Structures are given as C-alpha cells and as structure tokens.
Amino acid sequence: MTVKGAELEHVGVAVKSIAETRRLYEEALGLTLGGEEVLAEQGLKLVFFDAGGVKIELLEGLGEDPISRFIEKRGPGIHHLCFKVDDVEAAAASLKTDGYEFITEAPYEGGYGSRVIFMKPSSTFGVLIELIQEG
Ligand code: ZN
Image (cartoon, protein in one colour):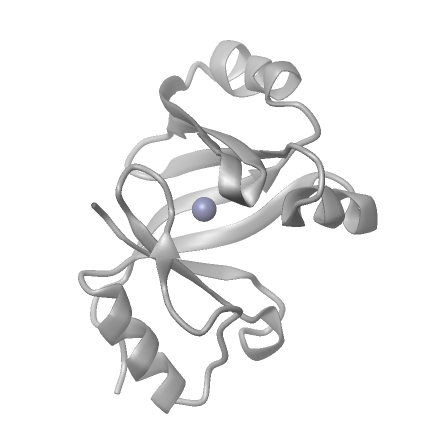
C-alpha cells in the first residue's frame, strides 16, 4: 500500500537562534510569520512562515534536544521535510507494511493540536521525513 496524495506541508530548518534567523525570512524574503510555539516537553522553540502554500519551520533547541544535537553534528541547515496526510496512524501503518522505519513507535502531539511521526532517515534515503495530521 501507499499513502495517497501526501502534500508537502513544511520544510524544517534547524537554527541556532530564531531571533537572529527570522530576519532573513521575514525582512529579506518578505515572508509572513504564521505562528510561534514552544514545545517544552521536546525542548524546542519553533516559528512558521508562510511561503506560498508551503511553510518554513525554524527550529531552535533549548538545551538537551534533537535540534541542538543536529546542529552540533552538522551545523545549522535543512533538517526535515514534512508531508501532510489525512490519517497519520493509517499512513504510518501502511508505510511500516512497506518496510519503512519510524523513530517512534506511534505518532505524538506536534503542536497546534497536530499529530506527527518521523521516519528514520536510514530507511528514507537520508532524508528525515515527518508526517503530520493537522489538528
Ligand atoms: Zn516539522
């Protein structure tokens, strides 16, 4: 089975400082800030910019978190692609049947009432892929 009609929802970018980086997206590129959120449990701060149908998500780590570890290893830059699906549980189950692997066993709360799950880059040709079901 496959996931039908997954749409690119956002591109996640790992940054050292949202305050410093948003200047580029907001002022230089003229994108509109679409939301700001702190995910305390995951140790992350994030903002979204509307970029013509697709969003840019800036992710800043607040300490011991995956984004800080990512930046330590590889420096700031593109972190993941996120695809919107109608039913994240069904999509993950279907992709698991196809042999794709996921970082967590089940989807979890991803902000704004969404449910998300990440696929393992080792099973997606090196790209970290997030699936999102909007809340
Ligand atoms: Zn994301």
